[in-house]
Structure formats: C-alpha cells, structure tokens
Length: 136
Image (cartoon, rainbow, N blue to C red; front, side, top):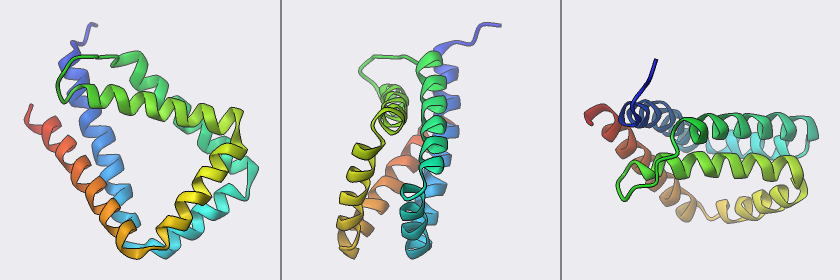
C-alpha cells in the first residue's frame, strides 16, 4: 500500500502536533511537578537512555516516512523528525552534554515570564501545526 506524502504530512501534523501541544499545555499547568520530573530523569542514567531511545525511535519513524524538503509548512514535520533523531542520538552518545544543556535551560526556566512566554509560543505553534493537519 502506497501512501502519498501529503497524507503522511497530515498524519504526522496531527499526531506530533497534538502530542507536543498536550505535553506543553500540561507543562504550563503543572510547572513545578514537570521541572522536578525533568531533574529526576537527568539524575537517572536508565531514564536518560530510555528517553533517548524514544526520541530516536520517533525521529526515525518521521525521517523514514516523511523526508520532505520543500518550501512550505510541510518541511516543519521533517525538521521536527530530524530534531527528535538528533536529540535522541545526543542523549545516547553524549548524555553529559545533553544533561548540561538541560540544566542550563532549567536555570532559564526559573525566570517565570520567559518560561511562560516560551511555553505559550510553543503551544500556539503546535496548535497551528494541528490546525494545518486537520484542515489540509
């Protein structure tokens, strides 16, 4: 069965867009709990490895099925897949670098306004991706 690339774009926009929008919204609602959970993950090498494999798996699924490099909103799905794959590989092969980056970001999250504005912008961006997926 052959699936055309626009159908895959729509599928990934719905799935990844909704996944990230839900995750971002929950981070906005439960900020302290999520900050603590993130710290706990980085203090546990097993959880770092499992999350790395999750990122690699999702990245590979997207990259293998949707490697579209055209000047439209569809390239965002491809870029997202590559970012997932790169992030997962970084966690697998250089977890200390990924941990340092995460803790540097965590320091910036302590600035409530910057963190809130960033999360809201990320949520709106992913809701736009979902909108594009459901209306394309």
